[in-house]
Image (cartoon, rainbow, N blue to C red; front, side, top):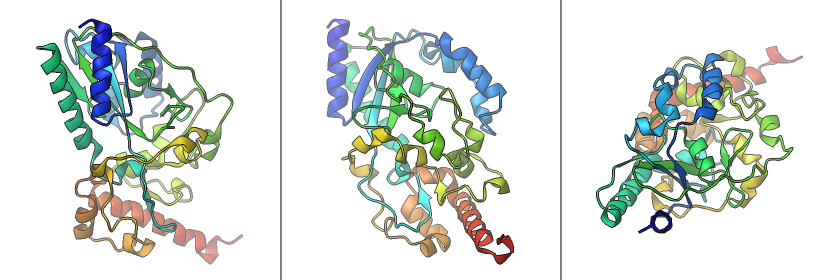
Length: 318
């Protein structure tokens, strides 16, 4: 097969495995990203995610992850759910409703890589999904899966942004796709809606202020300065996606493993505040919520509850 034929065949295989989009880029060093990444780290926008300071050169060049790599295959998988939480319940980000996406997507990418090896012979490749020093959104943008929006997420005209990204870096010579146009225009909905002012200009995120960082990545106590800004979120945050006009085109996924536990959508505020470790394991033992753990989730719920109690205290009346 020619590189063009191989590329077309890989996209067919990806679609058969349930991926929404598949695009391809030439594996190279992202020289244009060097200054931006260095500046972002120097300004401390990564907060206490010190692992982002590591493997700097590897983040910019996929050939350091897969020697001899020639192509980066970028993939997108829909996770927009059919179910919603009770209106007054503490909220978790939609991507964490069902089974941990790392496990689901790794299984699918392993299958894709296996079928590629069956078809093309002994190729070298590795699959990643938010699990290695890879600039996923940039590669997805270069591969034509969408454009990077002002909130730093990848957006697509047809589906919005409720999808996971994954990559296969391999030594196959493939036909590369080109990037798409940026369709954000003058819209600033995500910037205006962010309650912690984490979304800055020039598609830059101050992650140290992001509710997702505060509720998941931060292991210390959440600073009191955020007590009135959490907007009822206890694991992650979807605000910038909820207000994005392009997400009006989002359609529910059809992946059974991303369906939440049957008891999840019926949980009230009281159920969340009184959650036990046994219930936590039943609902979230196989989900991404385990990243913060039971103690981390309880911390977030207590912080939210204390903040609301402080807001309603007569001492705060003015």
